[in-house]
Length: 241
Image 1 (cartoon, rainbow, N blue to C red):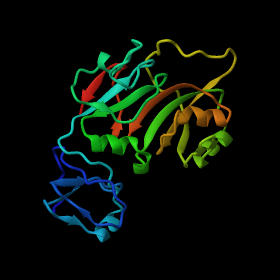
Image 2 (cartoon, one colour):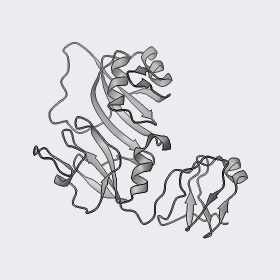
Image 3 (cartoon, helix red, strand yellow):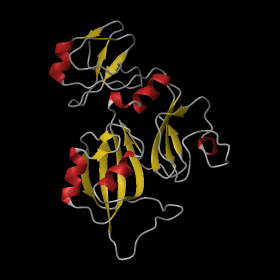
């Protein structure tokens, strides 16, 4: 075993609970929650449970020569490549063959969408059991209170069950592109922004969560999925990573 920084993208061991032994079938690196460097293992090696525990590692992804595309989905674009009703879809912006959206982003939401040709990676991004964190910037109708923020953080009761604990903080309005069409505001009613990080994926969850605590969502922009961020991508732009 050696600790050289990995320069090229290789495999990342499959998601697994800390404390179990994980077979490494290819040259592998494991990103640590607390370390800057990567651990690298020889082919066929096993990462011992004690090592995982001592370094408090979290193993997140399976990637093997995968195509990964980061796309800034504009408002009113569907997360699919075809539509019988003639609405805007992914193929209007992305010309890379054999990639598909990993998870969904509602038509009336904007921001980061990850596409890949790797079925296992798709599953690990989209399936809530892998608990991949997703961060949203949310513009709210009204000036959100600390009490409402605390409720969101602890979990709120929805019709399909209580949401898991979330990370929530009030933020200044982020510098974003103008939305088309513009967000509709109520006169004399202030708005506010929060950054909300969740690890599940109920249908229209963020909108239902903020409505449940009395602050409906006006605009929803996904900024981050796992290690991938929107950064300077403009609406309709994509990049391969």
